[in-house]
Length: 325
Ligand code: DGY
Image (cartoon, rainbow, N blue to C red; front, top):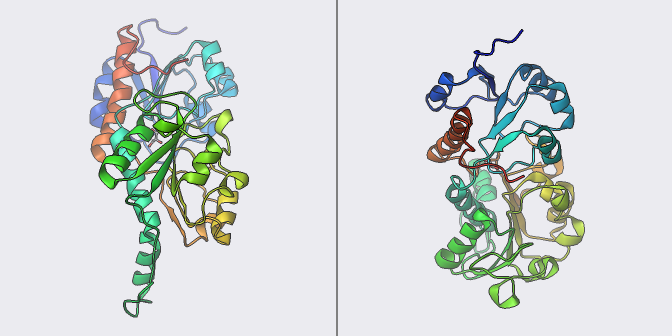
């Protein structure tokens, strides 16, 4: 028989910040997977037995199969803003409480997007590898000549919080003309051609550089594939800050190898941490390990927000950042 006075069990699926987790001990019995490797689906299922809640890092797949195997699971608090790891229909059917971490990582992620754009267009990774390998024999007139960014046109695909912050900074800080494509009009950015809204084909054709910020889901799987890459100018750089599955990595590698577009900067990969080998072979790709939100203050704020949701749930309150389902 279960003890009605026992605290609900909460699985913390990764090593996080112990000091931020401290207040949770008052309300929950914490089961901590104190490691940096994500739990395999089988291990997650096993660790979740008897757990009421999951404090997740975005890589745990919570789907109908997992829910069927974990009948006690009632709540998932994510430290990420993206929640494509949750099968929302199945979560809704179970009546799960769900939260994510919007807002707190907008600045860090937007600044990384711009860093990746500049590094990609100006060939920072490639030239640094060249210098470190001892091949540099001296200055040459067209050595590592890159693509200009300032004053050029940036296409932002997905004008959510992060996309808007990038658009603002690119416009105000880098003097860029900003075009965008978004399903719904966004206040302050509008949806008419004058506002910079473009159909996807026009955005691809008219942007010197493309920033992919759209959330991942069935409707955005391989939204950028071979036909879309073929519509971009040859001097364009593509940056993906969203999720790997939004861009077809194999098609992208082929486009980079053929010189169909100039370069790509990717922080996210389909099936990460595995990276498509063809991409690894592309000198004109800047590849980073999903670190766009990685400043310590931001990562702490992401964990804090998940903790705040869990503490609110323990008090019977809705929590500050529920996932809208
Ligand atoms: C998110 O929050 O979705 C980010 O990808 C994590 O860094």
